[in-house]
Image 1 (cartoon, helix red, strand yellow):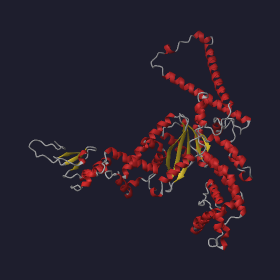
Image 2 (spheres, rainbow, N blue to C red):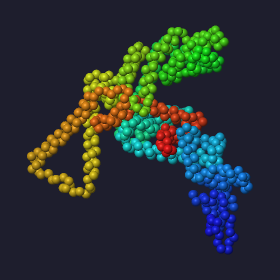
Image 3 (tube, one colour):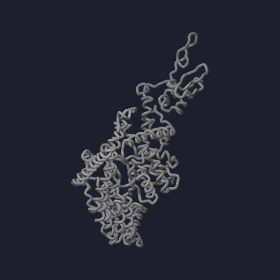
Image 4 (cartoon, helix red, strand yellow):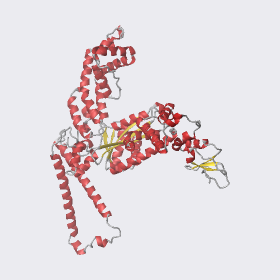
Length: 617
């Protein structure tokens, strides 16, 4: 028979095939060909398995790793050690596990896909298991694309189960001067915990106009099968183009526009540091001093010596970044910490020539640095708090703004109240999403920063929203009950005929009266829920607002539904900025030729690593 070691009567017995390659091929001696059982390809056979092994390596690498050592040419004489200490084999299942682990390592550690072809990596893998040969980079690309589709489908199913989500959006440019739009989504799960997921790092090839950005955001939610009505808000920075884009979406889909609190804080502080001439000169002198120690190896060495002599922490000086105010704050704090070692190092004639003593700061400049550091400390703490993703942030913003206003009653921060006006006021014409979220947070529901008239407007607005929520719930229940009625039921069985005389005597009026009575009952129910909720005292600031709602959902069912739509909104667009930190590591100089689509996929998989962790567990 063909492809076996048996022979028909009268034929000489053929030598039994020993190579494991024959587990994947069938031999046809009549045509001297071997057919692959996986892809049905036929190869010429000349009493050698080399061509078959090469075929497995190219087309079926997982199977090739299991057949390599047997098919590979080895000396026929074996030493005693080879029998006493055998090299562990590698089955098809083990090879698949190894390959999947390598892919997860690439995604988790943001390594280039080409690492599988590097000599050092292959030697390391060979040390772990000589019988396993990693597939080519092309094979890992296909695996990555397949993994991306799997995780995307899982995320689609998760988003399908939630009623409300919020988006953060930001635009970033890679080292290869390619622009990307980063979008993340946020919502409250059934367990009342914050959930955050990356949606895309979309490559942008057209101009970043408001209309294009609005269209791109619509494409992103369509990609994940999210209906526009599920999106409650978009958190973005103060860029004119993205502000205009969200305005288009607000008019079209009623999405709320929430400006990033961190970006606003940055604008407030940057303006304050530049508006005062003495502060501006002091900041310039501080940067010049730090730059001197950064560039001079001798100065840096001398500073380390002085730090050891004076018992000061051996910390390097920090150079600030002009676009981030908190980097300036950290620079000033480090200068204050290292003030005396710096002064001692600069006083050394060998380090600082007589004509360069201007590098050292004057006493009044040190005083300004100390005052500015104290003034910026609350801003730093507020920024760190608002950048969190695992807890509620937006509802705490008005209270933080009020506290910051009190801490900066100086002329330097005179523009701050104007920039924060939207976070601390409420009007009936343009309801503020931030204030609504604050009202639904049991820690701040008394809204002490608003006037009595504004508080009444907030209560009225929430009552209107809760009433609309109740009507939607009743409509869904009515639709479900109607859809449960068996089809084909005659109308006469479900709806009794209306007598003409009854209609003349006003039975319709009685139905209207009954309908109005039900509506009044609903209004009373909603009003009582509003009054009961706002009648309670605020819980402590350190308590968990989401845990409180989890416990009290049954007491305030309508407000609980509104809460899930509002407290899921982050206070900053930091999540999309963190997304670009991952994308920046992926689209690095070593991988500048990586396609934009693969940057999107790798960033998506890395940032949604929890799905990969579940698979590995």
